[in-house]
Length: 310
Image 1: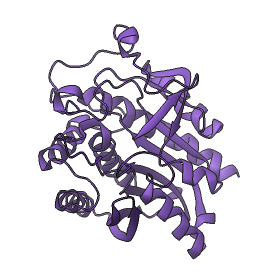
Image 2: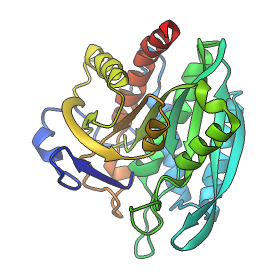
Image 3: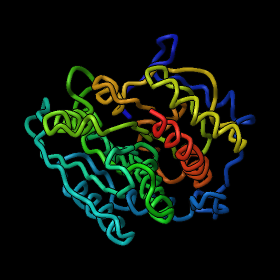
């Protein structure tokens, strides 16, 4: 995640301290085991995927480390029996052309119409510090891999589930104009050209969900009915990290919204380590992955039921 503003227009709100005692408890150590959720999501597995990505190091688009991270994602999908395809393209950046590759992992459903669960796996390019993106890139990608395991185990879902690992979300220089969301913009345009956009029924985007002091606000651009379903699921599970206050975010869901696809961004805006060298394992926790992962799994049947009626 590269840029955001709150509903009052302030950049990068720092409200985590206000909610520290109210939101939820996090383990003292990032790798502390978490109980598996009732719907099967296991944050111990997810956190290991996060740790493996961080161990690769900085993973900006076009780098050898980005390719290594891509290979890791594909290997995990293969181990789960989930077929992947690569979607290569050239990002036209302010620093020149950069080779980028989206990964599309497909869990076939009873219908060819699909629900997309997405995350970006690139990290922002910094030349003056070592940025490993434990939350900003690794956390949501780790959760998406684990969601794939759980969804695959359910058997054939009502709709095809597409796990979309997006490259090039981060600005190469500065978030302005087209220097951002390269992967999601390319994916949407390719779907439009192929005619497959009409079968895309909904998108749930995960981004920056590893913060130990997890605070997720309603994103004002997101589709209202999707927000209501997910926030309702979080409430039933007792996850107070999902707050009713709104904020406005520019992220990979915007190209989908512009194309008319119902879309939701689940993102923690209150992360002091955002785009700093401190976005490391020390700043993230397995419990946060559990909260988001099991909430998405709890919401998915209701999302499917709504789409089946339409």
